[in-house]
Length: 307
Image (cartoon, rainbow, N blue to C red; front, side, top):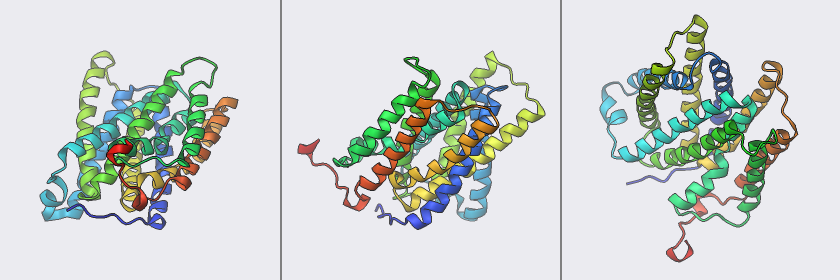
């Protein structure tokens, strides 16, 4: 029987704030890595290292009950959905970091809370209440401004960033649904296992075109990306265990402080007028979504006649 999950933001918030720090560090490492390595190489290293670390951790935690507590699942299709959307979101984020600024790519990756209500509407049949549209509208306007920061009709790097936010919202809701029957170690293990397989395929294809000849600095960067990535993913999954994704994800905007500072001091990039206004609108919109969206316990499925 699926279990009802209790909401406890006092537990979730510390986890997601620390997760945000590691998310910012991961983005900075990737931004540096894409200068000398392919996005596919970085993606593969992130999830391969993550899978190794998660496997070592689960062996220590589960010990003799590894099959029962980690490997055995009756939700394999949902596990695949969670892993593929999480992996695809990361890959789009890495592509965005190659073509746009660290702060723009990160804020678009973190538009996850904007799209979670839409995913919940179409998947879980939870109605989007009228007040929520104020926040969603502001966030969508902010996204439009970020997508067009240079005056061009399309900013392809920003579009990849937006895609990472959409895919991340599906992954976040999937994790919340999986927590009704599965443990955090099991969700993490399957996420990194399946995403690692995706990484093997992408790395093999890219290696045909760009041979991988890493320097010591490249290996150090890849290792840092892998460690930061697994810490971010682990802390975020634990946070979602204690509170719905729509309540947890906005707190990860704490990481924007670090990304903007890194952009300014390390990469010498100043956000332009459109980016600043867009980022402010997205953050304001997400806060309103959290405040105005009804609690999970009061969010009832839409009846057939209301769809």
